Image 1 (spheres, rainbow, N blue to C red):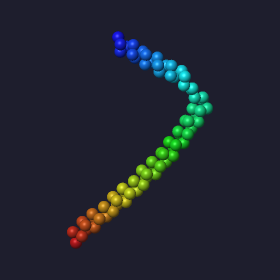
Image 2: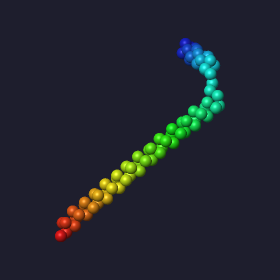
Image 3: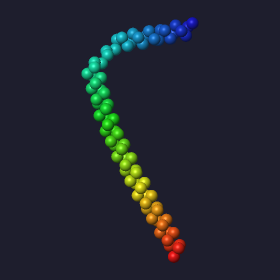
Image 4: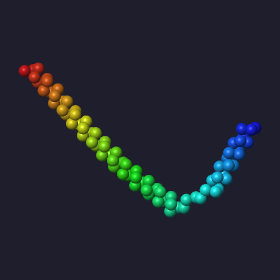
Length: 78
């Protein structure tokens, strides 16, 4: 029984705290969301650029490896 009353008192306490906290206005929330969207868009641009750079590095490395292996195979045949 003590655990139930403790949970009720904690819920009541949070209810009191939440009632005293000022709620943000719609314009404040919209401003926060707009800022968040702008930051996320910039992060995605940077992420996409990093992925493209890694792709270019991997393609260059693969091409170099293929050419090296072909040159070794051709040297053995001669």
